[in-house]
Amino acid sequence: MSARFEELDWQSTPMGDLTLRRRTDLSLGVEIFEVKLRDEFLMSSLFTVAEEELASLGLAAAGADQLKVLVGGLGLGYTAIATLRDPRVSAMTVIDTMPAVIDWHERGLLPVSESLTRDPRTQLVLGDFFAVMRREPESTGVRYDVILLDVDHSPRHQLDPSHADLYTVSGLRALARHLAAGGVFALWSDDPRDDEFVQAATAVFAQVQAHVVDFDNPLTGGTSSNTVYVATGSISETP
Image (tube, rainbow, N blue to C red; front, side, top):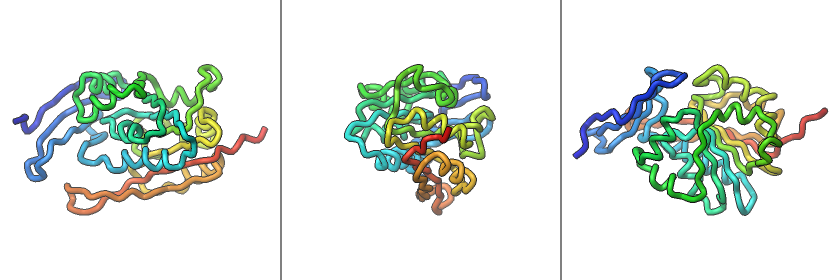
């Protein structure tokens, strides 16, 4: 029997102390994995519906038979593992800025780690997703059919101030350069629909949808909601 509470890893990062812990919730009868940054909870294996729907909704909007996917943010791995369930995915690159998070999966500490790391389509990359999106894609020659992003709490509530520019018109235009023709950008948010962000995205993409994802919350006994934005049809910037 596992301990009721166990700290699996603790590391200092440029954004603050990062902790991975496992606990057993006796009332629910489940084992829960949680990640904290500083004093705030980043993610929990108790709530994965919206993270998985980020992959499902983003991939559903892609029309190609073979998909090259870029995932920004590895976390507990649920968006990535949901991506691999789509047989059209031929390659998936996951970028995370924290070495600890990649290390957790390479050490098999999380429920989906083994399936994720053993899949030959998976490439885990240590790097800054936001910095990569600012670069000209010609430097690598890579274009993605789908880009999925789950790093910040929402377009308005970022983990780091340096992320803010991505959610502007200019930042989204820079991201769109990394998409193949007909490519899809999908974003997870913990907040309700943000009309200001939708307006910015509409300046860059022909179609922008904000999907409300409801899920049961056993902690409150009610229903909670996240938002998944799906943007398609990049509009070329007018000179």
